[in-house]
Amino acid sequence: MPRANEQVAALLQEYADLLLITGADAVRARAYEKAARAVAGHSDDVTRMRAAELRRIPGVGKSIADKISEASTAGTIGALAALRAQIPPGVHELTSIPGLGPKHALQLYTELQVSSVAELTDAIKAGRLRDLKGFGPKSEDRILHGIEVMRTADQRVPLNIAMDTAADLVAAISAVPGCARCTYAGSLRRMRETIGDIDILAAATDSAPLMTALTLLPETAEVIARGEAKTSIRTTRGLQVDLRVVPLDSWGAALQYFTGSQAHNVRVREIAVRQKLKLSEYGLFDTETGALIVSRTEEDVYARLGLAWVPPTLREDTGDVQATLRGELPALVTDQDIRGDLHTHTDLTDGVAALEQMVTAAQARGYSYYAITDHAPNLFMQRMTSEKMLAQREQVRALGARLQAGSGDGALTLLHGTELNIAPDGTVDWPDEFLAGFDVCVASVHSHFDQPGDAMTRRFVAACENPHVNIIGHPLTRKIGRRPPVDVDLRELFAACARTGTALEINSHPARLDLPSEHIRAARDAGVRFAINTDAHAAGHLAYLRYGVGCAQRGWLTADDVINTWPLPQLTEFLAKGA
Ligand code: DGT
Ligand code: CA
Ligand code: CA
Ligand code: ZN
Image 1 (cartoon, helix red, strand yellow):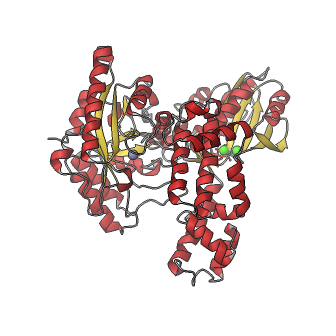
Image 2 (image 1 turned 60 degrees about the vertical axis):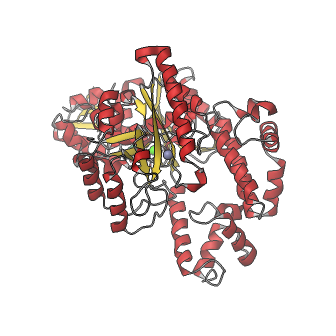
Image 3 (image 1 turned 90 degrees about the vertical axis):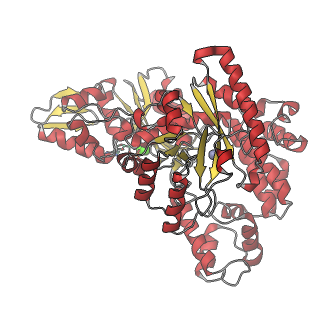
């Protein structure tokens, strides 16, 4: 999706927030929120669209279309500026504390004159929130915890934001005359969930033009340090970027070194030392003579140490070096292995694209099957009904038949599914007879996140035992930096999944990455199968798949562990749950 859309969406979202904070009509605020999501998910650049075209975006009427046009031409929205002038920016910042809504932010400002996160912390410590209507000792703890979560999350950037920025930077540096190679390294190449800073590596004889190019890019806000081997900048979005330039001869050794992790590198260097070799970012050297042995490619470096090349997603020193020594590295699942997406939405519920658009996007990805899984009725705000679901099924069947008629054997097979809600007692929406009509059911926890561990575990196990539930969606329901994982006994959950033939989802949304990679290996060892899904709410979200695949790789999964790499007949058999 175009980057400009995200900027416009951010302005609309801020407008919605400020409407709520200033006590305006909640319906109006929600309209702006909805439009913000639609704009963010729109596939064309909204800043290049005329007003009439804009109004065809769902949720965009005349007044919102005008504001989008204004944002596109002026870079800002007058009405938004007017609201900004009414309250200090710190009050808006209060609403980014997990669990603190706009109403409370306004109340804190009007009744206690609190207008920043720091002032709020002071107010809590001074016990000033205690007597405020709607607050209490419990909410004090909750807010303090929220502030803590926000602080730690703030310093690291979501994977997709760093990836998009890095792609732009690599393209810009690669275009500089004299640049022989350029790529990103560090935690980004290892596909960690969040990124501290972006590490770019380039090869050139003369580093100066590359360094200069970096410092002059439009997204460079500040030059932190400039040198011959390394230059660090901060982008306009507050991200730090380190650019290192090495001679082409050192490429492999440098890439290995700056990809890390540090723990992996320490382990590899120990192996070098035992062979009387020394490994640095310049190459692998003979310790005694100082002679360079290899440095041109990563494969050369690993091979000379007697190791197979280790995929970057495994380089965390969690048994990766031992496994490569024994020749037991797994053949990791890749993007190309994925044959279809099993959890996606349309504008029938909270998606922003119509069924046909989503299906066209799935075709463009070359999928062989694709499941539409809109929300079920118990998530009340989605206003789903049985009638709507059955009407959608008719549409899906008709569209599926057209696809088959159009391209025969290679055609995309459409599956009609749903995303059920796991109630606190483990039951789901709809009776068995109705559920039996779906090709695939994802079931997720969308409420009562704070159930105690034993009740939560029973809830999940009951969902797995439901013969119609195929996949547990975003199992821990955490949102990175915003919502903690639910309390569930993972061993019991994994055992239930393996016993009942229920897959665990690896939700690819970069704000979720759930099941988190650190739990995937244990689940796999317990016999669990996985589905790497995007949970797409817009056509552009289908591309998030790569982050789910990265997460799966960090969990050491092979294609065989992942049900949506399987051919359709094998998948269909799994979805039958032994019935
Ligand atoms: P991040 O930025 O916190 O998400 O994580 P990384 O892994 O990208 O860490 P970063 O940016 O500090 O360094 C990138 C890689 O460079 C790191 O994984 C290993 C290597 N590296 C950097 N500094 C050192 C160092 O002082 N010693 C060693 N052994 N390796 C280093
Ligand atoms: Ca880094
Ligand atoms: Ca760095
Ligand atoms: Zn979903």
